[in-house]
Length: 391
Image (cartoon, rainbow, N blue to C red; front, side):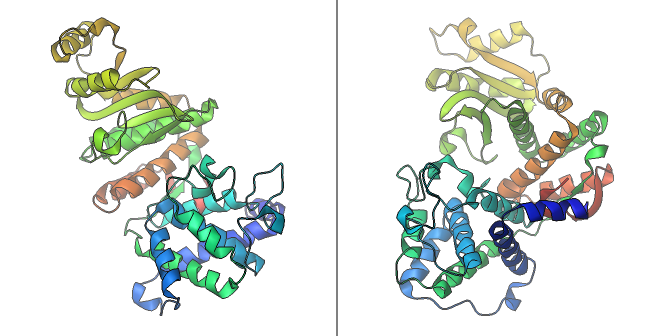
């Protein structure tokens, strides 16, 4: 295995290797040690301090800036991130970005996951920056501010290094004291054993966290495996759909088009009928259907039509409403049955990431329960960290 890893490292551009190592060393160095041992932060002027504060407030922006700063540090010089004619960005027909930024961003996400630090799936993986870092479609302007600042002719490498250090510290301050993800033994992920893990997790009193995030993780990996271009997204289990501006607890989109929405519950399906009706009536952009994944006891066709009739406003033709009711546990296990062992391992990794992101700060026991069951059910080789997410 070590020889294979070395061969991969040798095939990868040296700059990427250096950038990934710097990102790992910075986050591991701070998040893995007591804060009182960090030493004094670098001194910066007021404008730079304000920039760091603005970047730190947005996950995608702080991650993107940290990666871009790490690339400049690997090059040992400031880089021009806005003017393609300066020669630092990729030349047409490629997107005017730094080569390797996506894979380095993905590496940062893995390191942040290991330490339980909230993060994006990969800040620079987003199509937002497909035309460059000064993207007009970016919802937050902070990364634009950083690339403008970093590209100024008078900018020094020392100033970029100071911003890198300050951002790494800010990220590490959010490290949650949750157990690391053990190294998963994918050969042990037979369907009966994974089904037992599902049953065990769903039986744990998680306030709906295991139900929502296990379903979201499984659906997400299933969609990735099919190559349809559709993706699954989810939200805070304690937040309402309206507050999150989503059509359901889990959404399936292709591009920006909303194809499916899911309402997830640990309780009986009847308690989600009202929300499902609201979605199909008020979300005109929903192209396909709304699905309730819950305890499906008694969910006969006749019973579902009766509940829809009882809940629907007068005049609504309930027999035309495409509301699907499925049993949550059975559906998750069936989807896992259709995945290869490597994909099942990815489901576990994604579940861990979702739990850390949404529950690590206010409900860490669910993360602890997942790790404990992986070890107890012998689905993990050892209790140590799953280095770089390799399984």
